[in-house]
Amino acid sequence: MLPKYSKYEIQMLIQNKLNEVGGNNFAMDRQLIHDMLDEGTFWQSSHYIAAAEILETTPQNLVAMIPKESLDSISFRAEKNTEEINHVVEEVNDIFELLAYQLKIGGIE
Image (cartoon, rainbow, N blue to C red):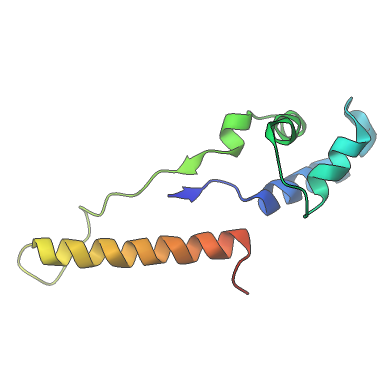
């Protein structure tokens, strides 16, 4: 499964929100905001809670995973889906998810 948001995406949402409403409109420690926007920061629960407050959402939404899609509706040229076909499709889907995850977190340029 893929995360709904990567840390980078959350940081961009925070930056956009701060630019939109002004960074001084939030009653929180300036160092905490600075840490959230720093790409080297290892996020802890306090960062997600503060980010959720800025983005007007919940921390659970920020760390949610995108549900895995069902492969049952995929249509093949074969007359019926065999276990072998289903296994290959699941492997390809797993590879695609790993690639998408790497792209999402910025691991592949």
